[in-house]
Image (tube, rainbow, N blue to C red):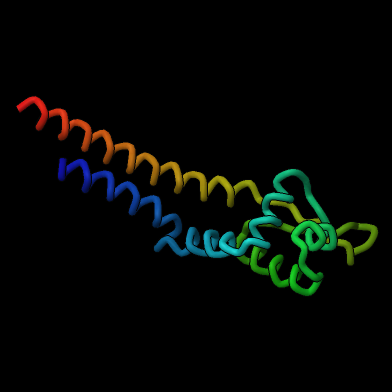
Amino acid sequence: MAGDAVAAGDAVAGAASAGADGSELAVLLQALADPARLRVVEVLSRSPRRAGDLAAAAGVPAPTMSKHLRVLLAAGIVTDERSARDARVRVFRLRRESVVAVRAWLDQVQAHWDEQLKAFKAHVEREGAR
């Protein structure tokens, strides 16, 4: 059982090190930790939007939304496009890759705990048979 725990722990450590030291995942999770930014991600998961629409959806003033969007852009969670007709208009989109990265990490953490529970169950069954 101890060997299983070490192997599963290594798998989670490997998942956490997405990027050389896990810093990419940490930046993603830190950016998602704010409720307003999380709301922006939820809105963008349905369709691309302009900053003003996102500010209204999140219930924050435009300058605050601008700060949140800078954080999301820096973390690679969203991307923006400028209209060829009017460069002042920016449309923000959710980057699928960022969501996939977080999901992959969560899947590896879940696999770790599934393995731990499986090992614990086997241990309990062995002890009960004695």
